[in-house]
Length: 150
Ligand SMILES: [Zn+2]
Image: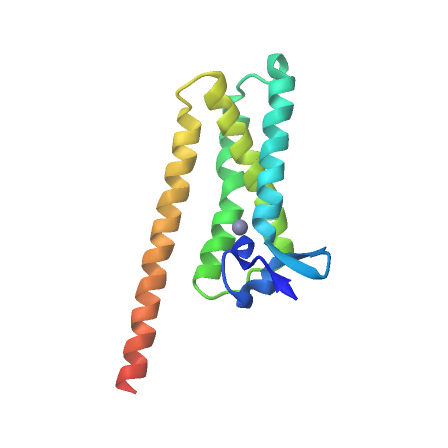
């Protein structure tokens, strides 16, 4: 029996994008991206707090990680919103990379606020998500009008 669909962000159709964890006689469907993202984010934050003195800002490397690390998850999410498959393996590695990227920019913000790189990273993620949602809405309207017009 499949339970806790809210951990998968969607209905049963997203089962292929989830990890299936056995808990007693149930299987919990857990979003593969979130299963990688949040533990990685927490681990990266914890390691940086422990190694604070040795992990100061490295502007070029931090910018590459912040943007390059966030982009694959955004791309996979966007493709999935537009109807493309989002395989579990892709969700795992892109979620872990996003957790790494967010963990670094959040730490830099904590260390030396305001974290400009975090603001840029979040703004680009929001802009990408907004653009995708607009495209998905346009795609849905186009499909609906084709059905209506025959
Ligand atoms: Zn998720």
